Structures are given as C-alpha cells and as structure tokens.
Amino acid sequence: MTNGPGTSPPAVSAYVAAVRDELSDLPPAQTADILDDVREHITQVAQEYGDDVRLAELIDRLGSPSAYVAELRAAAGIAPPAPQPQRAGFGRRLLRLLAAVFGTATAGFTVVTVADVVFSLSGAPAFFGVPAAVCFVVGGASVLFLVLRHEDPAGELRQIPGACWLGERVQQLRATSWGPGVIDFAASLQPAWWLARAAILGALVASVSSAALGTFVFVVAAVASVYLGRAAARGQMPGRRAIAIYGLNAAIVAGGVFGVLAIAQSPHDGYVDPIDQVATDGLAYSHGAGSIATDAGVPVTNIFAYAADGALIDQVRLYDQDGRPLVLADTEPCYEEAPDGTTFVIANPWGTNVYPRFVAEAHMSGSCVPAPPEPPYGAQLPTSADADDADAGAPPAGQRTGQPTGEPRPAPSGGTSAPGK
Amino acid sequence: MDTSQLLKGVLDVAVLAVLRDADGYGYDVVRRLRAAGLDEVGEASVYGTLRRLYSAGALTTYVVPSETGPNRKYYSVNGTGHDVLRRSAKTWHEFAAIMTSLVHGETEAA
Image (tube, rainbow over all chains, first blue to last red; front, top):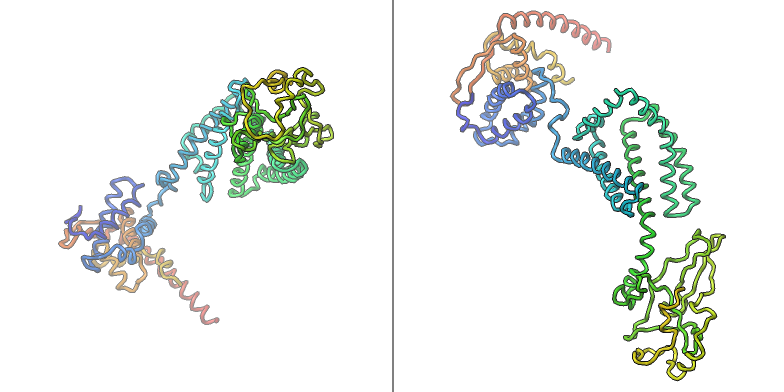
C-alpha cells in the first residue's frame, strides 16, 4: 500500500519497524492494516520536521513505539498482548532451558546415586552425587532467577520445557484409583520435612562448629521451620515469601547433600592428605621423591631409630643426603570423640624431623591424652650377637652423611619391613 | 484536572463530530481536534479511535493517493455514525449539564 517507500526518511522506517514488532502478536492481515495507518501517520508527522527527521524527534513527539502501540491498541479496543507468551527474552528462555536440563539431570543423577549407594556399585557415592548436587544447585538457581521478580511465578514455571509434561503426569496420577491416596500420603509427610530441614541445618552447623551449637540451631530452626510450614500450609504466605521459602528449602537440600558427600569423602581424604601435606609444607620430601611409604603404599608415620647395640635412640634428628630435614607426613590430629584407644602421632616438639614422634591416644572420656610411643621392637631387643658386630661401625647419632651401602647392617635396619607390627 | 483523562471517554464523540462536516484522513482529524482546542489529544489514540469506529460500522473509508507519501485513508461518517453521534451528543449534553451545575454549585458554596 505504500507509495514511494524509498522517500521515507530512515527514522520513519525505523519507527514503523519498531511498531511492527510491537504488533507481532496480531494476525498478519490486521498488523498490515494497522501499519498502513501508522506509516501514513508517521510520514505526516515526519514531514513537519523535514527530510532529515531524527528518530529521537519522532519519539519525543509520539512517545516510544511501544507506548504508541499501547495507546493505539487501547483506543482501538485491541487487547494488549498476552503477558509475554512468546516474547520472552533470550536470557529468560536460556534460564528456562537451564532449569529444564539441570532439573532433569538432577533427577537422573539422584536416581543413579541412590542406586549406587543402595547396591554399593562404585563404592564412591560422590562420583554421581557431586554431579547431582551441582545440577541441583544450577537448576534451582535458574528456577529462582526465573521466578523472582516475576508477577506470575506459577505461569512462568509452566513455561519451563517439560513442566507441562510433568503436570500432565501428576494429573494422570491423580486420575488413577490409588493416585490421590499416594499424593495425600506424601502431603501428610510435610511436617516431617519441616523437622528434617531444621535437622539438616543443625547437622551442617554441628559439622563446622560444635555439637552444642548445632543442637541449639536445630531447636531454633525447628520452631521457625514448623511455624513457617504451618503458615505456608494455611496459604498465609504471600507469593514472594513462599518463593523465598522454596529457595531456602533448595539451599538446605543442597547443603545437606554436600555435607553428606563431604563426610563420605573424608575417610578417603585421611589416606591422601598426609602425603600431600609433606609437599604443601614445603619440606624436604614430597610424595614420590621421598616416597616414605611401605610397599603397600601406607605412609610411614613414625620412625624408631635403634643404636647398633639395639637400644632405642630417643630424640634423633634425621636428615637426608642433601642435609634436608627428613620430615614424615603429618597424620590426622587427635580429635575428640575418636573411638576409644585410637592412637595419633604428634610431631615431636623438638622439631618436625625429630623421632620418634609422640603419640596421643583417644580415651573413652572423649579427650586426647599423651601415650608412650610403642617402639616396634618393644622389649625384644636385637640379639647380642648383632650388637657385638655392630659396635665397631655404629655411627654416632646425628651424623649427616649417607651410610656406605656395602657395610653389613645390623638387624634393626633390615627390620623395617620384617616385623609387622 | 488532566484533560487527557477526560478525553478518553469522549474521544469517540469528538472524532465523529469533526468528521461530520467533512471527510478526513487520520492526521487531518488530529489537526482538526487540535485546532478545536484539544491540544492534549494523543495522536495514536485518534488513529485507534478511528479504527474502532470503523470496526463498529460508524465510519466508512476510501483511499486517496497522496503525492507526498503513502496513500491516505479518508474516513466519512455513515448513517450508523450519524446515529451514534446524535445519541452521544444527547448523552453528552445531559452529562455536561449535570457536571456544570455540580461544579458551578460547588464553586458558589466555596
């Protein structure tokens, strides 16, 4: 319908194009009809400003294209566009996709993790548990971003791909003979969840601080949780706050999962850490180079030096061939509540390379008490024959140079592996 | 008081009234309303109102080629439109009379 579109100043074309975008929800024929009017109108207005009319001048005069269209639609009795059905921005659509993908991934990984734990398949629950937790956090964050500051959270959630499918499944479940009973039963478990989330929070606090504080947090959280839960169940929760609670729930679940994984992980760490520790301490021996471990790979935690006569040498300072202090990996420090009788090696106060190291033992009372180190030979000293042989060549304690390898060694040196303690 | 708020209710009547004497295209109607003193009339509102009156069957249109730009769609009031205008005018007069006496009485009281 246009006459000489080439004569339209660029600003007019731009404005009309923007108006067309705002009308995109209408049938094409109606859009075209309205655009004819708009083009006529804008051209008229532009003529008042001359050929080099700027878009800013048009907007100044007529308002923004969206405001113009809103005014026109209101006056013409055309319903305003449906609240962003397909007009969602790229970011929002991306968030929806993220929510769908990571939500599905969370469900999948969770099922695999549960199966893995129940049937002890991999032996490392974190293998699938960590991805599940990560997916849960990412998916949950996407949903939160979608829902927060959105006037219709439920409608927005339905826009997530797959949400309709899920809703239909729930409807199907409801339609079955046993479905409503199952749903009712699940809903009746809600108070248990109120306590459970408080317990998770308390357990998390207890794991990072003390059991007492954890208990205190649990009690306070339980009261608050039940109060909030009852308020939400009665529907007394405004939309925003209800969403905040969903977010909190998600955070607590994620925290609980991470906590459990961290605990499940810790015995494994117990073996790895001491060796790594040597490297991070910046001391002479790193794992591999020092390789102070038995053939089985168990780290050596203490050294008992015997003189050639078989006497245990107390407080011996050890160095390697380059004069670097020979420092063994630190073991786990003695912790309270350790099983009764568990022993822990403590660095010698004379220095990290002074041996034998001290020992602490956990007692039933829950405290750590120093214990006498148990030398591997104990009272069984090397034979006197060995002692006689070695007398001549016994090096003085503290000598730094390496020993000639050809020299016959008395029993204690060869005994490192022989007497299995 | 904001005239644009008042205009929303009576723009139909105003548009029909300025088209009663002579046919006009959209921007023409805007100009006539402005010339009549309705400075605050929204241009998009006028175009929207024309569209609605046309849909309601109160206006007919015909296209006239323009030398300076796009074709111009002229609107003219048909029989239905004249009826609508007559009834609207009656309603307006009654309403205006009530408002006038109300506002007049209030100012006297004050």
